[in-house]
Image (cartoon, rainbow, N blue to C red):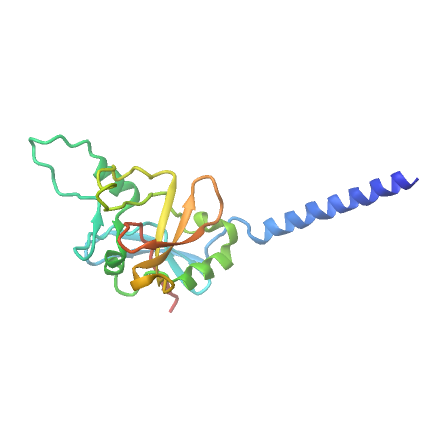
Length: 212
């Protein structure tokens, strides 16, 4: 009788646990934006779709503006006929947009938009939960390091595995304000990680604006 009682209690706890997990998943179902639209960057005519969640609108494609401030990759300068061109840079740009250092990231933002802060990213995460990648269609564009020991790596070396996105928030715990926070996503994990990274690294950029 005692064994039977314990079995019933265990079964009850298991059912409650399953319901709790189901409720938690339901609380953060695959997000549906409140509205969607298209923004046209008047600097180069490139269009960017956006999705609205609450009082924020997020671009759902990576920035492609080729700024001359700071460091920008990939190099899309036409290759001279005498040199071999495997089209890798152009393919990366078409798939993932640009990679920017911190200076270039701020310069790439069009009027009316901003480079999202830590707070902006956290507000989005509070609304969409672990589905942040799906919510604004984040891409796994990798990253690029301009240091001599890495500068020979192909532009798409980490593409398809990681995605790194700048925030506008400087990491004030690091010396000389040379680090800023970013968001990292990994292809086989949900959600994202907050990381502090040197401002000289080149990452992808998304923009956000407040709903008027």
